[in-house]
Image 1 (spheres, rainbow, N blue to C red):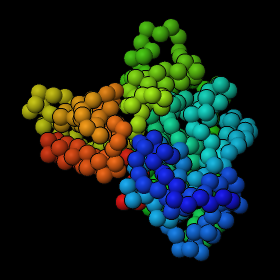
Image 2: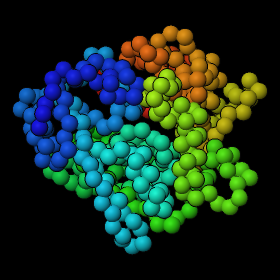
Image 3: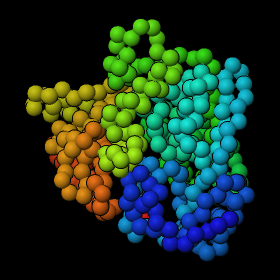
Image 4: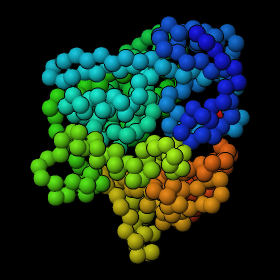
Length: 348
């Protein structure tokens, strides 16, 4: 186990901001994780688990303790009750897993193509896109419980999945280190083409799109929005969608609709949970004065997607957070909605 000191964290994130870690170690086995945890405890160091760095804002001060980069790899497959189970190491690249699953004609995560990061990070925020979320296919999670130093298997229900949340980023934040994730996928299943962007893409299409065609469509749509990591594309220097789509009660939605009607606007929304509406955070941001390409300084809005805050090259974490707060305040003043950030904030 090689423990490095004073390691820059910015290059390990897609946003490319933040200070150094006091210590950093990359671990590829469960036993190495146990060693790293012991190292941190003996020295009374705070511990942070780093995945692919794609949904992360690291403070300019960095992290004063140990950063644990989980690199556990490997994928095992087996057939069980008509489903193909993929048991995947937390350090595996997420999009490579999606490509593998689609190539084997298994349905369930094809709409999650092109999302950066590692497999272990996907359950934390119940990653979702284009009408799918990982909670629909996760069968179980193997995790190291920092509370009592035990390896535990958590079933889907125990993870407390909801819209962009789980126990891993709410009630049990900081308790578990995810080691492996088991997905149950449908062999020969149909692609899910329910989301508006996908319906538009396939309008006039002859026959039902295959899983591979759907994956290709999702990646092209993401690329058009700057949400597919592409070398040389400045709009990719971001943490992805920076704000969650607000889920409103009927009363909140009615109030928002009245505000929109007063401006002769109609806010796009769709059903979410029972008796609730999910509204577009991107629409709220754009109609609060932050259009695509907004900003001429070190930080701004992506030219391709209003929800992506981008580092234009020399931004600091402070710049990012100040801009985030500016957007939140303006949206709240105009629309009465407080946007909730989606990334994980480290060292603040």
